[in-house]
Length: 74
Ligand SMILES: [Zn+2]
Image (cartoon, rainbow, N blue to C red; front, side):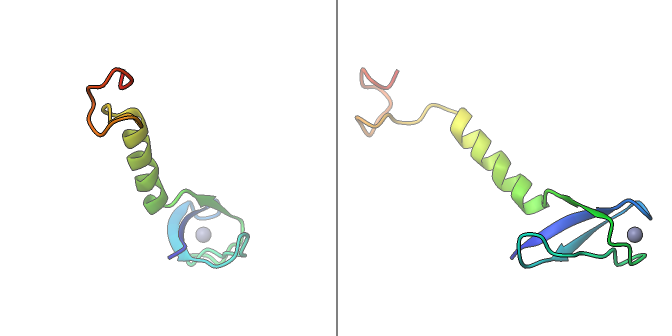
């Protein structure tokens, strides 16, 4: 579900909105202002963290063996 978080500069409120399309026109539900900033959604942030942790985290097996103890595992 493409739910994005937005920030309204007019009333200084954050809100989430379900949007479709790459660049939809979103208006603030509090004041109706369309000058809103798209923020990274909480969902996307979580995925990003997970990805970062997985890629930089603990050593996993190398492509040459199923364990982590062969000479090419490093
Ligand atoms: Zn607003």
